[in-house]
Amino acid sequence: MNLTAITFDLSPRGFATITLNRPDRGNALNQAAIDEIGERFVYCSMAKAVRVVVLRGAGKHFCAGADLGGRGVETQAPKFTLATMMEAVDRCTKPTIAAVHGAAIGGGLALVSACDVVLATPEAFFSIPEVRLGMAPSPVLAALFLRATGYRHFRRYGFSGERFSAARAVEMGFVSELHPAEGLDAAVAAIADAMQRGAPGAIAELKARVAEYDMPPASKLYAPDSRDAKHVRTVEAEEGVAAFKEKRDPAWYKA
Image (cartoon, rainbow, N blue to C red; front, side, top):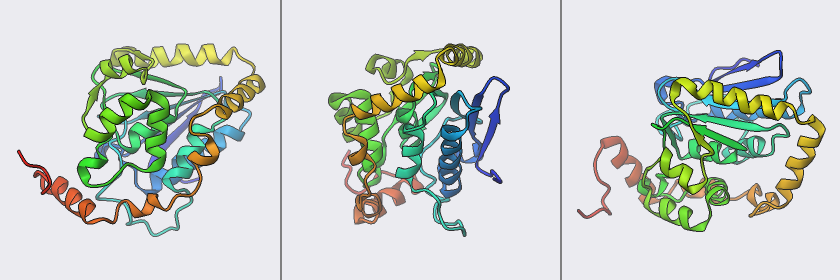
């Protein structure tokens, strides 16, 4: 597989590292990134050599969400949708660790929500900004964040689009631990080592059992939903995206 949007590394101990590698775009998700992330997580689920998967971002940010300027320009047919890519991350049979720095916004926040353990630097920040762009978050993003944080937190940050800090994310239970940037790799390595002490088959069985108790259940969470395409075609969405690109307030905001 010729990777253009991510890098992939597998250590001799079985620690796979998937790094979002579009730093000039804040690692925003275009179709190439969606396809490559999905394919790598499917591979990690199937490969016996992989024991733990670490997801991180290159450059200043973890992931700044959808690439509003770069989506739709690819010439190849997509292999994954946002929903099926998130399913590959969420249902990976191996333990997954997100190492977050900088921004984790929109689709980036969904990726974090889909991982088993989340470590972050104190400077990291998060948001679901879709309503400020005139659209509701995708059903998968909304469901993953709701599952990770609960109704009150989801309603607060889903309805407002506000940013929340890494410290606030720990309070909410969304982030497991904070570590300074210079100590993040060591913290990830320590947890990966601890997870490697568990038997691979037992961990896979446990992850499958946990998935049975998800709310909403996987059968509903990853069912095809026309809203994934429809929610970006409204008049509000056109105005919200235009206002974002022009760095102005949208028409519906009254100061």
